[in-house]
Length: 153
Image (cartoon, rainbow, N blue to C red; front, side, top):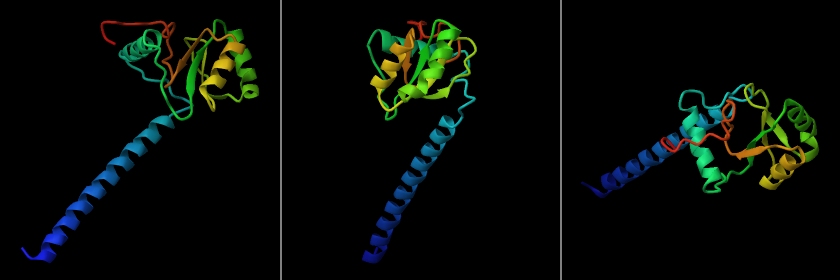
């Protein structure tokens, strides 16, 4: 094999790898974008396993005190009553809280985002939220924030 053929082979090989990486990353980013943009009508993860996912999150949160580390903090805030929920919705903008999803039907909850975790914590305290679950939106099911399944975490 001559030198030019060898160099060409290496360049072609590297080019194929670079294109493959670029296509893989582009596809992953596209799929992430599609999933995130399913709001405002997203129901969260819906199937029988909805309980398993949230149970695992509750175990991480309640036993290991683990909070997801994401660029723009998001959380599901849960309230005792619909009145508390409506009050929180009306006060959200005063605390620089953006309500992403508010159409829960089985729990009094809103899914919010803010510039930092502390801002969400202050808002939750001021509006009497009974629970704050950071990270991806909580499934729409009664008391799912308390469910812990140690058999299938």
